Image (tube, rainbow, N blue to C red; front, side):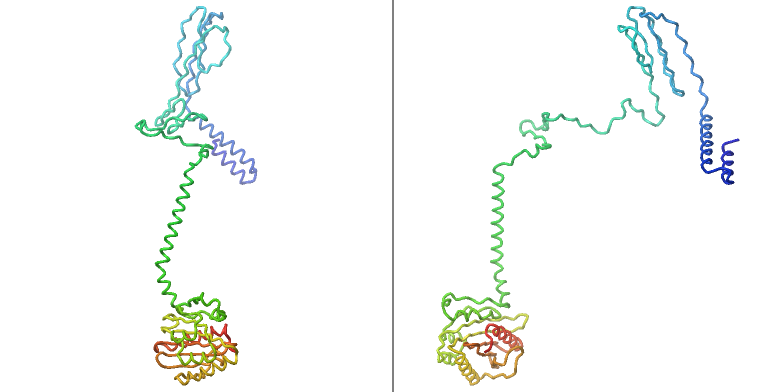
Length: 405
């Protein structure tokens, strides 16, 4: 029965339940193993039996005789090397013993005896199409680096064409010796000098930049509130506190801002002679004044001129009396009293308006022992809404440090 039929029979027994799965696997493996063994034995041709070497004649077992050991026959299918012809026997006092390949070492009979070892058989030739492997194996690709012993002197790596004209190439430092070199003493000093030079250059560049851009900053500052200038000459005056309480006004600050005598108010065009006379009649010597000039900005195209004056008096009653005199003087000189109430401005703030050239918006009120005067003018009626806005913002800002009452 062939192995195919045996497998088929096993499948039938497994399907019918007469054979367990474990027994089925065991018997199937046995059938397949026997089939493979049978196929291998049938595919290999019968090798002829190796020819037996004629037995050498019995030699004398004396110490002076030469022993010839027959080589061990190679495995089946391996070509046999040519037989080593036995050397003619030398019956001298020191005979030579021939040893065949695959000879196992054994102690010689006589220590003085010289033994002859036969050449090993030639290696098997590789199949066609494959290169023969050398006895020591194929060498690795690329040159192998030569391991230098530790602390060995470095070889000169200078190029052959350099000669003595070029300094020798220093070896590459490895390991801890890479950190052994100390920096030169002058190197740190040079680094600090370089840093100092860079700092000086940066400072000079910033100075030039700020100097050249000063014009643009001043132009932009015309639309913002300028801090009030201080007067060192009037720092000892008792009215300096009044000036310090005046908040900055919109636009570019007037350089004449400060504590001014009454006569100076007329010269600067802050008040006319009639107003100055009324102030002098109430024993007013100097006032705190701050002025500025607005430029067209996001709030409007106007060029309003803002003037804020704090007139100190000896009492609140004197301040109220002077306020009444000034308001009558305004009406006599063409200003109109506006009775309409403006938002966020108390009624104690009296509003007068002059529609002429220049247009004038003026407010007066009493705050303690002081009389407050706010005057906003516009050269022409470019934008009355901008003029009114500048007036209302200035009055509200002055009401914070100088409220009515």
